[in-house]
Length: 321
Image 1 (cartoon, one colour):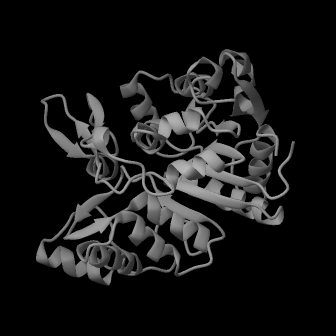
Image 2 (tube, helix red, strand yellow):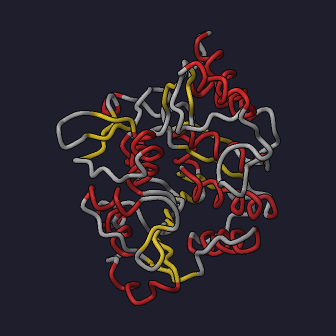
C-alpha cells in the first residue's frame, strides 16, 4: 500500500548520491513526504587544522541549491584567495582545493567540534542555514576516516589516494580504523526502522556506501527495516558513472557490473540488503543475474533535473510508493 506522506531514508555519499537526493527530495515534497539522508563520513579528514566532511558538504550544498554544478562539488561562485595564501605558507595539500566559501563551513564546523559539539551537532548546525527539505544525519559521530592500505603496508588517507593520485596506486584494501567500535549517530537506526522505504543511492559501493553499512548496527537495521530496501546501480554499461569506482570494486573483489554490485549488496531474503535493484537500460541483459531481487530496468542517467526526478519516481515505484 502506498504511504500518503512517505518517509524515505537514503544512504548516500559522493556526487551521485547528492544529485539523486535532490530529485528524490523534490518528488517526496510533491507527495507531502519527507527525506532523511544518512551521509557517509568515511571521506572526512583533518587538513590545515580543519575538519573536512566532503560527502556531507556535497549533500548540504546540493540540497541547498548552492553546489557548483560544473564541478559537481563545492560552492557555486567560489574563489581561491585563501588557498593561494595557504600555498605561499606551505600549509595543506596544494592539490586539494579549499575554496573560500567552503572554508567558511570548515572553519565553523571545526570551531563547534573544538568547543565540544558532536559531529551530529555540527551537521545539524550546518544544515540549519538553508531550507533543505531534508534531514541530514552523519553515519556516526566517531572519526573513522577511510585509509588505503598500500602494498608496502603503509597507509594513505583516501582523499590523497583519490584526489592526488586519481586512484592510480593499486591498494591492498580499504580500512576504517575504529569503525568496529563506532556507534550509529543519534537518530540513524530509528530513522531506518521507521522509514516507509530505505534507498541505497547510486554511490560508490565500497568507499561511500560501504563505510555506512560497516558501522555496527546499521547493516542489521537495514536488513530488518519494515519498509522495502531499493538500490540504484552506480554502474552503467560496465563502467562507473563518475570517479574511479572500478578500482575500488576490483580491490574488493566485486565485478564492475550492474549485476556484480547487485550481488555484492545481496538479496534481503538471503541475508543481504536488497528487495529491488534498479539497473540501466544498457545493462538489461544481466537483469536475471541478481538472484531473489526484483531487478528493474530504468533510465539511470541523471542528466538534468527532469531525468533525475524521473529516476526518483522509478525508485519509489520499485519500493511500492
